[in-house]
Length: 299
Image (cartoon, rainbow, N blue to C red; front, side, top):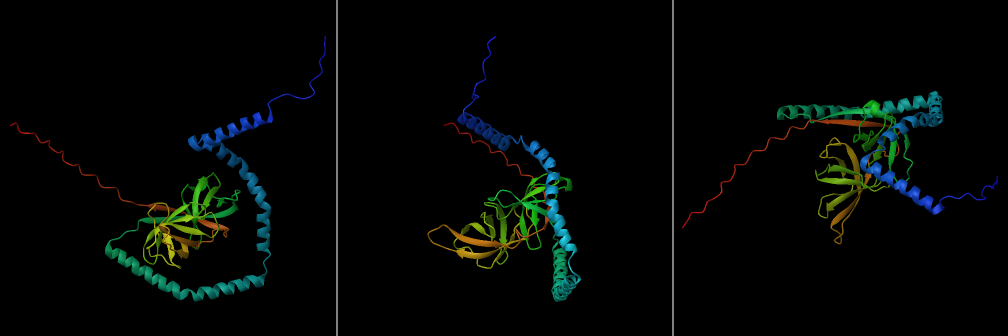
């Protein structure tokens, strides 16, 4: 029998052929996931598998932070307590005024027969880490579908709106910040009641108002709150403050720059808000009477 030596070089597809094959497979997976959502189940399974590893990876930092908090000296705690007591006494008068105004508002609502349209519930969540993509403005919190978190819920801190839940996993949720590029929030000018649309610019600490006419009454220092007309954000939540207004006859719209009121990138804990809107049903449309066709009279 003749014995042939193995080939010195292995033959197979060229590197260019392999590149084209893998590129085609990648594009097919991207189109399939974006159009038919076939990979959502795999993404959920991967999130469940990776979740323990994420917790283990973040455990050293969490243990170190808790150990640092544990070893805070007694004198610093006493000074902090004294500062909080002084701040509480200073705001006592304002709180009493707020209570009187709220009581008066409730009385006026009762007299006018008004009713509350939005019932707000909130869930405390801890910020685990920011998104890996440096070009996106997203964070991940430790509450998910197990805690009845759903996509679209607003996320706030003690100063105002931070963003919106855009993706939910069993134990985690992804929050898109209001500074994300082209992320839109319907807002209302507190000073004059004008409505507008606030958009993210993709830059931390920078927002802009879109499609505002040149003669619109927006000024530096105006505070913007959610208008509530989109059915996502409850009305009255602080969002941003106007920092710069530029009007030029060369453009159709004014260029208005704003800064967010909330600590978009400076929070360890946030609130996930759930607003239950009770909107009355649309009245039934009245049926229009059928028009009679006019007949021509014979000559």
